[in-house]
Image (cartoon, rainbow, N blue to C red):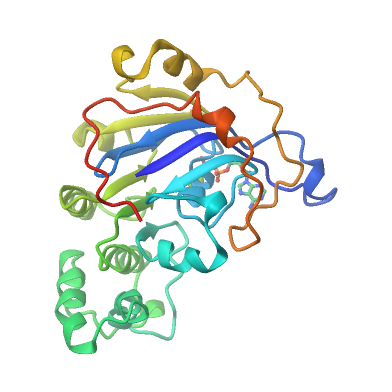
Length: 292
Ligand SMILES: Nc1ncnc2c1ncn2[C@@H]1O[C@H](COP(=O)(O)OP(=O)(O)O)[C@@H](O)[C@H]1O
Ligand SMILES: [Mg+2]
């Protein structure tokens, strides 16, 4: 599950420092993505999609509000909790961050090894994942010997090999041809079927049309639409209104926008204010078996 309550993000001004940033890059984000949901994140370039995914990945701390991922409110997470939480999050970003001196196999095996999986047990999983993304036979290749699309597919295999509870992908089909993109979508949908919460940023209307899910549209740092809209009976009309009520400012903006989640936890005092205005996706709530 991913829950944002009145989240704002302000990047520090590179010249004038943290307090000087004039406006928030992301504002008044309140929503809940139930465990096991599939959400498209759309919006024009610069709308804040990558920044939002980074906060969900716990690699970027919000300036205000509360981010709760996998049952852990970030404001209450200790620094020592973060690596363990992040290990349950698979992410495919646009920079692949493959280790250039490790083979494709070893790059994909890395998260399993970091999680302490015995060597004998991980080989079949890594091989199967590489086959799924169409890289069988390339196990021993180093990233510099692979094309951009192939590197991206290694990164995808690495993101899903641990069967993460939360899977984030930032325009993952950008470097892929149509057949590879279809295969990737099958993989994401399979992970979703197995219970992962999946969030995919994309520009592609075709992709969304072919693979229906919730759609969260961002524009200028705000959520401009949630489709399907929360049912009034479940969420209350004030919820739907609050989802768009970016102009409502609770005055709790923090001065410091620098936000690496590795830093000491920031204050979470905007949380209570945010709770009252939280958006909820429609549909039955799944059992929250994934907490903790
Ligand atoms: N590290 C950063 N420091 C300062 N500003 C940033 C940083 N990353 C992104 N931004 C700004 O935040 C806004 C949203 O960017 P981004 O999240 O990358 O949007 P999108 O992924 O939708 O294109 C843009 O105006 C961008 O310039
Ligand atoms: Mg982006």
